[in-house]
Length: 149
Image (cartoon, rainbow, N blue to C red; front, top):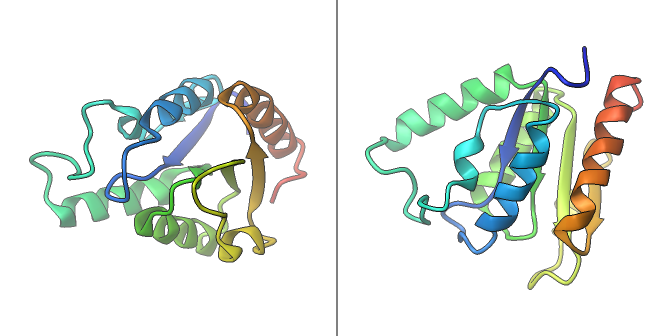
């Protein structure tokens, strides 16, 4: 798989709070260097904690599960606890997708042990969004050379 041609599922909090939407936009911009981000709407500043306007919950579920199936890789920003992000992570793990979780040091809450202790997930901590580009570069290089399962 060419490291610049991935289908990428990006997960970040919606209903759990949109305080990190700016960070999501930055991450998505970096991810677009490596392929198609199926969920780039997560960074949309108009998306509120109320979810997507005019889209039925069942439709969101079916679409997102299809996208997880389609994705080559799953990236999640996990600094803001979210039931949806946790559910999507479990689905990605079950489907044996390579998973990278990004956690901001100094976040209001600590990282769940269910994520931090899961050896099937790659967890990287960062202090500022300026570090994300190099974290993603290293992850995709490891993915391309087979170091990430």
